[in-house]
Image 1 (cartoon, rainbow, N blue to C red):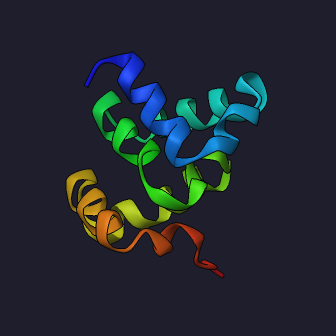
Image 2: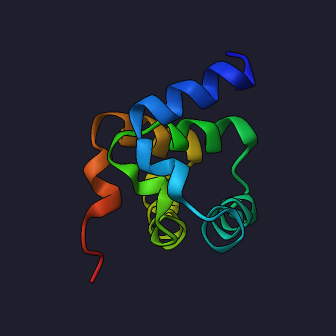
Length: 92
């Protein structure tokens, strides 16, 4: 999918994404996900998940918790596609 189509898809799915501050929210999230060794394509998969979880900084700590549980980023992304509520559950 081209970047323009990806942007349009994202905004159609989550219009509030347009209100997110890049430096305050998106840049730290992308940096944190990169630090977890997620690839660009894996980060793109996370962006396309429902519920707007990508807009929240807590996604990094939640994925940091879940990665060892699922054993790999591929297994985690597969689980999140069917159970995206995992990203909104209370880890405490």
